[in-house]
Length: 90
Image (cartoon, rainbow, N blue to C red):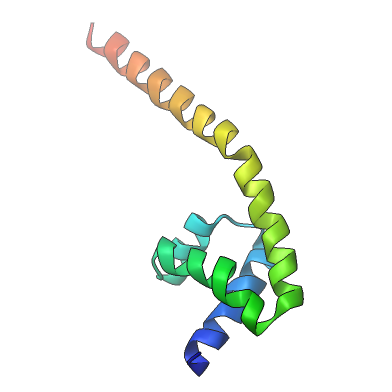
């Protein structure tokens, strides 16, 4: 594995642990694609630092367990906003 990828994996893993942010949030913060961040954290990190990978895996599992709640909240806000917009036009 190339040295820059190794450093990126460690940096992304530490960032997840410090901030508890989602893969999407980390990707937008760092400028990497969501796919790159996800692959670094789930496939490559355990080859570089197994202990860090274990901690990151737990955080990612938590995010996965609550994603249906986040999605539901986003949809609720979306429809509430649309409803308010329609009232303003009437």
